[in-house]
Image (cartoon, rainbow over the protein chains, first blue to last red):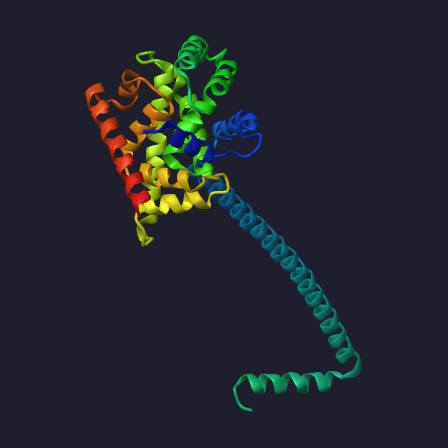
Length: 124
Length: 194
């Protein structure tokens, strides 16, 4: 076979300018990339899963603490108000009976009491 | 591109001297850089003749060196480093072709025709009519025969060396090469007659 033909074919293949000069650098950077430790996907997923779980748990505990604090505060307020109402009522009752004692005569009081006793017998 | 026998002997001796430094972790980086510098062109052209497209050859060459880098620590020295490199490059190139063949299964063209049309469309191919005719003739050979032809004809590699790379006996290689030459001559003659 004629070598001339082969020579022509061989010359037909070209490479980009500077290809061989830059090859080593590109190769070494690819090797570096391949050698970087890659965390296994499973491990990364597990870690993320635990982060999510802990975040959710912290969130729930926080919300419970806020809700408890709110309930306690509300209960305290209610207690204070109830106490105020009870005190106010007691004061009002005292004032009412004082007023009655002041305004009604003994006969009228007795008549009123008799009325109450009458009512207590169940006859209205 | 073609490696004269004297140059080949020098290259083989030179890179074999690198083995102790390549096996040693402390000196590996520097020795590997020297190895790449000493062998990149030879391996590139060997791969390029198998895969034909520049981008593919570049990929395969990089993969070859990455495999060498990853396994050089375990190199036992049972074969010459040069032969070992060639064997890895050949296997990588043939694996690449097999993957390409699988990918092109849906294209209504013979794989070899597809390879020729891709090669002619490659920005880094500037063959004239004669070159294209010869390439078509070479591409018409079965893959392994084509590889033997390339190594013997373009690289002028001794049969003993090709035998170590391909794991085929020298006798079988000689027969394969002569059949390949005969087929190429017939192919070119037929094309000329047409």
